[in-house]
Length: 229
Image (cartoon, rainbow, N blue to C red; front, side, top):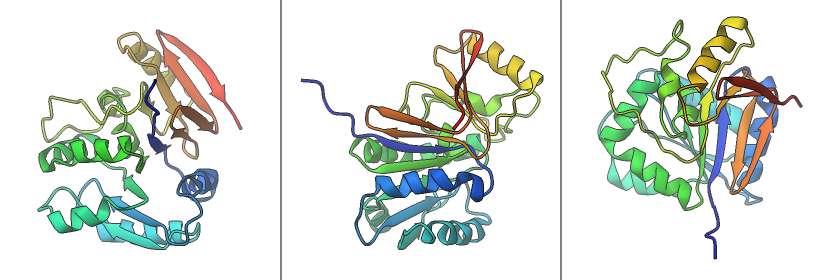
């Protein structure tokens, strides 16, 4: 008998709160109808994290989330607090520099822990860099070549959480320059690449994948518009 896929993921591209309303709602619905809902916010770095955490709390309180934790990974890890955050209904990986984020997720041991959390049914959420983290690797962080993340930590091994069979390109702009860059990349990648405009995203609920908004797929040098809801 085939083992049931428990993975529940929410991948955000970015954008303003209003444009992400449907994704926020879909995320909270994944948590079920329990009265108390807990989310943990993992920033890409500690600097400035409290400000962004405040915004995060205000955003999801409006959708019914009641309890929040802040858990940076580029400093000492409190093992007792780690046990607490792994009981969260959802863990949110924020945006930022993808190379720096992956470096510290690996160094802290959190990459393996988060993968197990997701495989066992915990809801994993990612925004931009955090969403890229859920894919097989973070190669997309270096694309397009004219606007890459800086790899200041000199990270060489780019394998990520590998929870889905596709790659994710956030902040996609449907320009000729972006299209050409993505089609060229798709010729060397074995995985389809989903390009998401800000305000759009992808929900994975076990074997079901739902696209919210205008999503483009690049594969083997071709571009296909998948959804525009």
